[in-house]
Every structure is written in structure tokens, then in C-alpha cells.
Amino acid sequence: MSKLSIAWSTCILLLSLLSNLHQRTAASPTPLLKPRLLHQFPNGTWVENLTTLSNGKIIVTLLSNASLVLLDPYRPSSKPITIYHASTHTALLGLAQPSPSTLAVVYGNLSASTQQSVPGTFGIELLSLFADGSVSPATAYPIPNASMLDGLTALPHSDRYLLAADSVLGLIWRLDLFTGAAEKAFTSPLLQRAPNSSQKAAVNGIHVLGKWLYFTNSATATFGRIAVTKHGLPVNGSGAIGEVLARDLGKATYDDFSLGPAGSDVFFLSSPTGLSINAFSLRTRTQTVLAGGAGETAFDHPNAAMLGKTARDAATLYVTTAGIIPGVGGVGGGQVFTVDIN
Image (cartoon, rainbow, N blue to C red; front, top):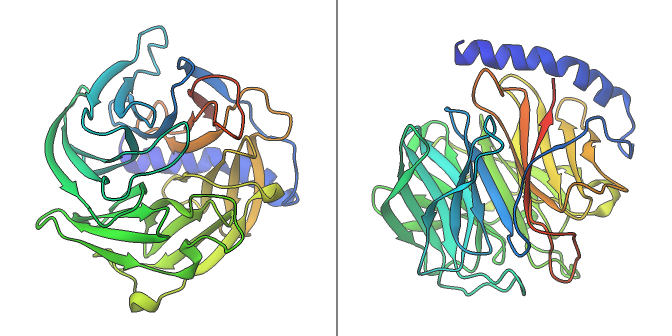
């Protein structure tokens, strides 16, 4: 099946979901779908992010021990495989695929127990990605002026640049993979912490779709967008502000998010403190709890989501959870869930 066919079939599958979403109130607490546990990591394991592969496998980052782990959803009894470990750093965070044969990951020194970062230790590692899901290190790009890199995104029309969210500085860096130079590209107030916020992280997840850079801000519990050029710069220059599209249900907080299928207007937003995945429709500016929510006993702080990339799992949303977050709570180690939106 072609990628176009997969996209259209998934959009059709979403129509019934969207009709429900559009008819529900924004504060509706009842989830539409039930998450299914794919893998439970041991206590003390903080799963931070993920990417889905064209071979149907999943790669997740571990914030707690700076590793990349490969999982096979179609062999749930198989053991996860550690395919990369950053021995000189303590955490791996955001993931992106600049091309089908490359994987980029954020590295740095960040404590899972205190959630304190060490400025000057963060950067982006570019790895070669092979057909079986294995990787090998290629090039490290340190960004010494960064305080805490988190979300990461490639650009759909350029393999030269990556954008990385700095959650402490409240801005987005643009990395030139050809020269290694990094610049502060987006500095909108919408990316920064509110003055009285107890949240340590501001801008968090970022993804580019069309002419927009979409982002979440954990400190303000908002989801928004800023117009972006094909080279990863603000359309209106450094003074570009952007707009807020949604605020988290129950004034909880957003982490990373997933773009919907091609041609749809849906985004899937993870809410760690809301214990939910929320579906947001750009067309109607309507938001509802898709999975999890109040009273949830399965999701242990969901923090990232992504749709599958094969015909078999194009309607499957994969979700990672952090597990126990010191000072916040939790039940156990991080997890990977599936949510079937078919």
C-alpha cells in the first residue's frame, strides 16, 4: 500500500472519531478510547520520547540512563533491545528523523530524580539508521549555550536543519547540520515560562507541519503555533509571536504531541499531570480526552505520542509514559502503550 493510500485510509478511519470529538464539550472528562499496555519498564526507568519506524518497530529514549531502546510491537513477548547508550551523558530526550536513514537525538546531563539540568552539556547526536532499526553514531553537535534541550523536529522540506526546544531558556534553536552552527531562531514570549509558574520546563514538544511550527509549553499548559519558513526560521523574523490554539484540560500540563494523519486537522497531545492523551481539532478548536484522564490507573504520566508508519499500524497511536516523577508521584517505571484510533 502506498503512503498516500495509508494516509487517506487513516483519515477515513478518523472521521467517526472526529464527529464524536466535534460534538463533545471541551471539558468532557470521559475518554473515547482505551490504552493497551505494550511494554512496562522496570522501576526507575523514565521513558521520555519515541519515534516510529517504517519497518513497524519503535525507538524510545530513556531519560534515566541515556539510552535508545528498540521495541517490536508485533512481537510483544520479545525483549527490548538497547541499540545506543550515550556513555558521557546522563539523559537522552527528543527524537527526530531528518531522513529515512538518519536519526537525531538530544543528549545532555539531566537528573531524573531532581529534574535539574546542567547547562552547557546539551547537544544533538546524529546517528545512521539501518533497515532493521539498529543505529551507529555519526556526528555529535554540541550546543554549549543551551540550558536544557528537549523537543526536536526535522523540517519537511530541508535535510540541512533541525529545530530543538530549550525548555529552560524558553526558546528554539536551529542547528545547521552542514556547518554545526546553532542559532536562537524562535524567541516568542509564548515559548517562555510564566513569571509565577512552578513548572521548570517551558517550550517542550515541537513539530513542523506545512508552514507552521507547532509547540507545547509545559509551564503555561498551552499548545500553539508560529509561522515558519522552509529553512526553519520565523516568517516574520525574530519578533514573531505566534498564537495559542489550546489550553490543557483541567489546567494540567502538556508535554510532547503527535501530528495527525496527512490531510487531517487533528493533533494528539500528551498531558502527564492530566494522565491523558487529548485530541485537538484545529478546524473547530475543540479538544477532548482521547485516552486516560481523571481516575486513570494505567497511564503513568504520558509524555509523548506518535502514529505508526506502516499500513498495519497507521491507525495506531503509540504513547510513552515517564512513570514515577519525583515530587509528582506515579506507580512504577515508564511504559509504552498503544491506542487504536480505528
